[in-house]
Image (cartoon, rainbow, N blue to C red; front, side, top):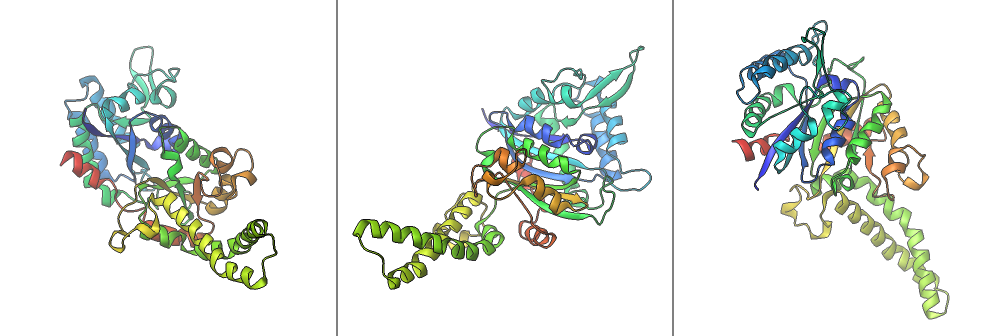
Length: 386
């Protein structure tokens, strides 16, 4: 069976209620369904009106659902009437065999009862009718495409507005202060090695910060990006590992040869083996984040996308850096507090679930390197639907 490209659109209500992680977790655990792209939108009136009209006239949507969906989009997706600031919508692209059907089964139908927790809409959505049978409240939690033809039409429209209405939504309606502090989070590649709820669970933990997600991107880090991003770590590793490595090497040599290593030998090891071990650990970090071994990457391939993926999120709010770092926990998961991201999902100092900027200055530096505002949707939509 050929692969398909489908989407999940997380509604403003779900995002505002911090249900983003739970929803992503539901889809991330589906076998054969890979998250390949993500983008945050702050839909303007033109996109909202055109999307509502598209839903109202789309033949692939059941006739009795078209007006319900269209009216909902006009009400829930439009910018705030008082401030004019946009509401947040997160668009996720998934690739795999039978993707459209898998997404539909996980999302559930619009009328799923709230007690039906086996679907996303059963858990997070509502479809309430009054005694007379009329619909009195509707919240679908996510919007999806019922067919590949519908996906093609909907994604074409959202891609058309991806630059004007998408990226990092700095003026989102939910932000109490549009000048609030920003910080960058990377859900690391180890969370995507096999289908699981881990990416969503980690996002769910970060939601306890009370911060707002204003940017999202699935990214395959190039070696050039990784070198620049982690470059400051290399000298630290060389210095930190030098003494430890030299001591271990001398102990091993003394045990093997039966005599104490002379000072000149120790100094020689400190000047050669120590830095080499630091560089080796640096290369391991590069491989973990890119899937490639730095010494083997030709210069003309340094900017090529890596072979592993991560999920970049931008959070905003008061004291964002410290709030996220507190929930993340220290670099070494063994030293982290129970309930922190790294204690729950980290394995060691490198495979520690997630990265977060350690200062506002580093947040700006890291965002400048990874450019989470870039549109990662286009290449996938073009590959399947153009």
